[in-house]
Length: 470
Image (tube, rainbow, N blue to C red; front, side, top):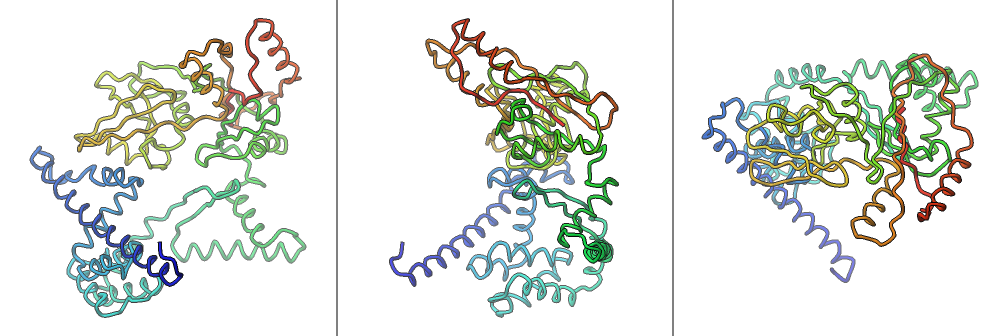
């Protein structure tokens, strides 16, 4: 490391150039791998239209990226081969990987010839992009592309309207980003309506901030209910001690991630009382040592509804390594037609793209015995990647007990009895309100007394293994 500040800045620049050079080498290797895989698939008799399947997924696994990101990286590398000036700027460090991606993204609608023309017009040797920021690069490339082929650019804009969508992703502090990709007219109209309502409410004395009013109004209009609590199913995985004894063990909200214990209790209890909604209770069990959920098997070809719900709760998101897409398919790890059972151990949740990739020639998967549900995926090149189901809340004691038993300790504590867990699957069925069990501390003390009388060691206070899904 350089001793003076000027040397440190020079070193930072050199490292940035090295990153760009490594990225360019990765792009070269990516293109070569794609060509090699296509040749092998052609020799194996794969139809031309299906050649290249699974290549992007293998690239993603090798780079520790999601399959969707792997597909974009493959497309970027292949496109750069037809843009020599941009590729050279990438190798030399004049453009980093993100800015190269912007150039490719804004020219992807053009023919290879027109794309090469834009590349030559804005090449690094002309200085057109040197020192430009992201917005300036996008504007310059977009203008050059429009001059080359205005019809293709207009067609791309029209096609973009078909890609409108809504997505949800986690934000810090138990918040989420609810994002809508809309045509410009619809997006502006929706934002203007929310702004107008917020200004009206503020003028009438509403003490909430403008942004808070807009957010609350959006939720109310989408759900049709003040506060957004309706019959829409929300699942929440938490321990019994978090729910009943104010324990600090965090909970898990499928589709979002980990949330604090206090927020979980608020969703599970406070929200119910305020909206006069009752609950439907479904019981599951946890294994006494590992803390894993236990589910039934089925002889059916397709996973029954209860087993699907089990896989959703256990896996949370797509089980392919580095992929956190929502689960869309419930998959047999060992194919059903190869004798694989329809069971929790042989089941996994996958997104649609990963399930299709798994079925391409050369890919194999198998369950691996272990403390938590694990799947080994082997790619056509022979590389193996492991995926382990995320831990459920409150499974720390199970891990400790198993380690004690495996290492042969002389006086391991008595294994706990199988404990009941509860899965509340919706707020939509009329029934008696769920009542909290009375005197949980008394029952806990009685259990400790019985263990002492039997001569068993008394474990320290621990998170429970009761699982509640709301």
